[in-house]
Image 1: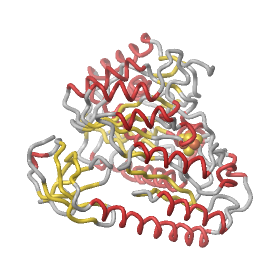
Image 2 (image 1 turned 120 degrees about the vertical axis):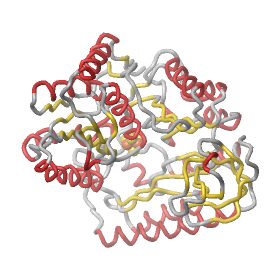
Image 3 (image 1 turned 45 degrees about the vertical axis):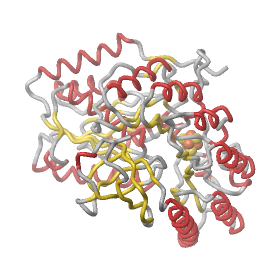
Length: 472
Ligand code: SF4
């Protein structure tokens, strides 16, 4: 049995609520804010929590970051370029501060939690007014109050602890019909290339009753789609004593009647037959599964510490397809992992051809200091890495085209999000397979799930016509 984790005591959360009330009543405080988010859905949802707290403290969203009184960069460090982009943008604000000395700048998120980053911020980024990590995001109201009252920089990064599931703080969800719902925090897997367990800490699962109640509240508010979030949702509940695991949790939310449920991310090694059966038997669970394989070669998978083989992964793919024939599969792939030979890279290509994903996120391996892979020999030259990724992208592009062509003539159910970016007369949204579909329709459909008959397959999207204006 793993160590049991627990919630942050209510008295501590109450102190944060009190800090929010005090800031609200202060006269001198940043009036407008801008939260700039990098990285994954977890970070997007963390930014919604920050916005919830900022609004409670009386701040309003700024038109853009140039006009905000307070800018927070919620950072990512999964890849080197995400980190460089965040630091580049923070540095850009240094110039703006020269003309607007009252502008306050904060950084938070995964990058801040990296070893050595606090020292770097203290020395190299004197214009950053506030920094905090992933484990004390809930403490933001107190830090914000200190920054204003004490008129000094506030840098506070704390390590992971067992008692750190924050509950009862406000969340601002900008979409009234789509919502992220965190079911667990952290990761225990320590894949050799990944920094997440070091910056997000060990797995901590939220109380299933709280998750259920939050899903019900969202449904009652009219939310059409809930995405359950966790670094590895398939190991939900292993740190809890109540015996509720991810399949039961998902089933209970499906029974609630939320029109559409998604979840991410799933580690293949923990994908159980029970979960496949729940998806197959569910009424509202979208038939779209993101199952990151990362590589197609057993030696590399072992070196990555993924704890499955090519064959066991493919077996799970086949089992999923046997139960849910129309399931749309997507994945993440890494090329140029240290020591990857041409033949090993070809194994990734052949796996992609065998599985025929609807789409894939492809990445060139990016060394992250502190992870085992960063010290491995056999670095692949940039030019060669680029050749490999281009080849893989071309293979996937062809498969995506062929898969999408098969959707023509079918009716998909699209949650309408907004007018299309390219053609304002068209509506755009995601279908049950998580594919963007564009079609002619009125803006009154925004926020509804409508049937759309697919007429055309584009490179990464589908085009269709409204089958009926009646929402389903
Ligand atoms: S499962 Fe592996 S890749 Fe995913 S967050 Fe955990 S360590 Fe990183």
